[in-house]
Length: 140
Image (cartoon, rainbow, N blue to C red; front, side):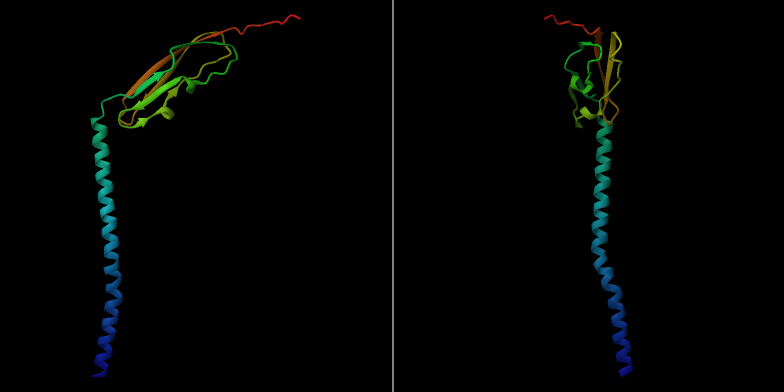
């Protein structure tokens, strides 16, 4: 009879050792599944938003023409007045533009372009006129 009690107690102990972690992990697994479901729902919502996004971003420059002199510094980003999207907000850091040779006299166009995640695109142009740098002489 003692052997049966010892075997029974050992059997119960083994069951407890196996069952307790399973019961405890069940809650963890359920939380992970719920988080995965929520993440998938958010991804689907985002994809639906992108499919419905037909509005191009806004890209406005501070001016459309500037006159500069050879060797002046041209801060391309300083001419961006607004770059935003109705769904994504501020896109200023995503504006792309070409650079020009500020040391060569002539007329150039800097093309600015912005696209949102749905690939709606807006463009703007800045005409840059580069003139010869004046050579002033001071007289005493």
